[in-house]
Image: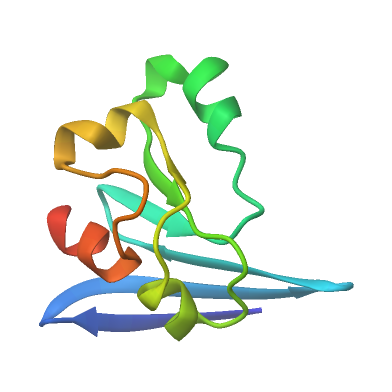
Length: 99
């Protein structure tokens, strides 16, 4: 597992990579929200944890932190819509909206 600070256009974030059997878990976060690889269950966050207003989005088919930054979000939580997030928004662009 690696946890590394990263800066996107001068704004601080944390990149987490967890190597698991047959897959890698990827997350980029700050104090407001996060983007994640396809392992993120957006429906669970929207339905079971809706009261938490979690700002999050999922990109699928990514294997590195750089790919996560460059990929379009496939699905976002309902709470993230207030920040301008939507399906198709590039990961880096979504993060800049919460920085």
